[in-house]
Image (cartoon, rainbow, N blue to C red; front, side, top):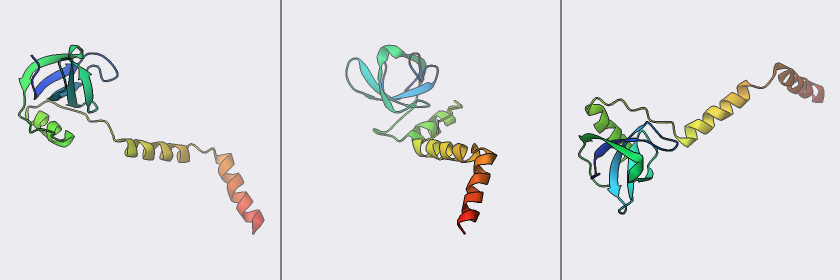
Length: 113
């Protein structure tokens, strides 16, 4: 039986192979998970328990869960937030502007003067 605080590995989907902790029981089929995966509901059949548990308060934050996993010496890599991912995309776009386009922009400014 999967109980709150049970550490599992996600076996299916986008987050397959990543560490998850059961936070809450939704119904007989679904649980709420968080950890190295995104916080979301998950089918119980898509989780493989590791046999370890951590103590959690109801509605614990992701940071608290990751700290508890680190105490058990389980290395967890949390993906970056959407905001930081968007910032990185903008930086890449700026860096990937060809040199010719940069010169044209500078040249057009000088012509208008």
